[in-house]
Image (cartoon, rainbow, N blue to C red; front, side, top):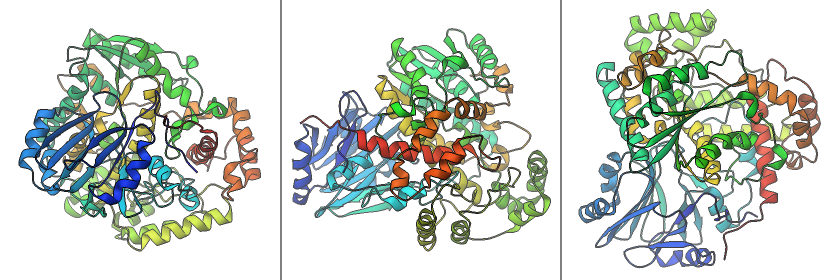
Length: 611
């Protein structure tokens, strides 16, 4: 059984109820927890939960009420005017498309309700049927507590996949009877309490040339940063790669004091610090702090001390103390808002799989790009041609992926022109776990549709969703330090601006993230725009495994995953006793560790909403 998340100093949460009498039982259960409450125009309970002061902005006119929760520029007056002119929940599309920032949009209009998160998984919407009513929430464990739901062991087994579970399994909650909205959908609740997902958004056609796309991205990213900086005296920023550098430079244009942090890596090849110093020298006025690599907690350090409760297994559980170093330092210097570059890689580096479409529409350009990517790989000639000319549907690809769960991983030099990287289960997964995941994938493959018809766009949207869900949980950790973690590259308007640019302009083997380079000319110092390197963190993972081996081996003792029959603890112990085989990536171990830690935190969680 799961209890409600702690309401103390941690992250807030909210539940959305339909405007009907059948939701009364749920509202009564929530009210025993001393929740905050916003009512429907009818007077029935609508939003209930715990949130910080000013987090919810509401406008009301007649039988319409609109609420926005998160980081945005909407005022109560603007929402009131919108409520006065919008007569259906479908009519909110226009308002939604004009909002900068990252937020949930919730509306109650003439007895019907719309609940909408962000396009990626940074602002999630979960829903479940309880009694005769469908209810929604921004945390899956809140609904699980209302339902007294158990962990879905089959879905949990899918979380062991490396590099991750494929669409549409990746975003599924690990609680029985709890569902989640997919990309581009909102939840509609009718007057009888019935709920259904409604598709309202599709990715833009990638036809905008660089000359028009770069200014559009600059405008969208500038607005996204302005939403977070406006009205603040102090903000903090990561200052590492080109993505966070761009966000920091935009923040420095405002009136708030900007405190920037650069974490120096242990890897001798890590060059974040010298580039950050050049940026600070070019910007001027930024309060810059460098954290030495040996002052940062190691990967896997402190696993036995993890007590943060997430609503799903999260990679941040491998090193929560490491994730909190910068937020704690920033909060101590007066920052309540910390801006990061998360999301930039997925949006700006893009996927070479766009060549699969480009070879059919612009063959000469595609062949030029193909030669460059193939040389960098290097990609084997025969496999490259096979993937390039293959027209396998996503359903067929997913079915085959389910058949190959225990096959050898693809070599590092494998081309990246397919629907994605076929996932693998680790060697310590039990036969029962393999069969459970295979059944889940085969069932999904019967009806699955890709996130986009183009392979490259599908991969980018999938990566944005997968990684933003992880950053969502890092943001939860940051609230414990007393600040909000902002990731502007995951904002809807920024994503739309980036994906609209032609792939042949945005993705090239000869230039590093050309779209952000062109967008930030005149904002980021010119020298900083010439950077084409990035620290990828594998060195820290290898050192962390070697130095924290005792912590990893301790997880093998009385393993909760082993209790469920999902892993063979003896095999895992043998693997953790020495360096991982070259064919086994660190991600395979990460997934297992976070699932194990998540199960343990469920057992140890004793806090509940006061009441």
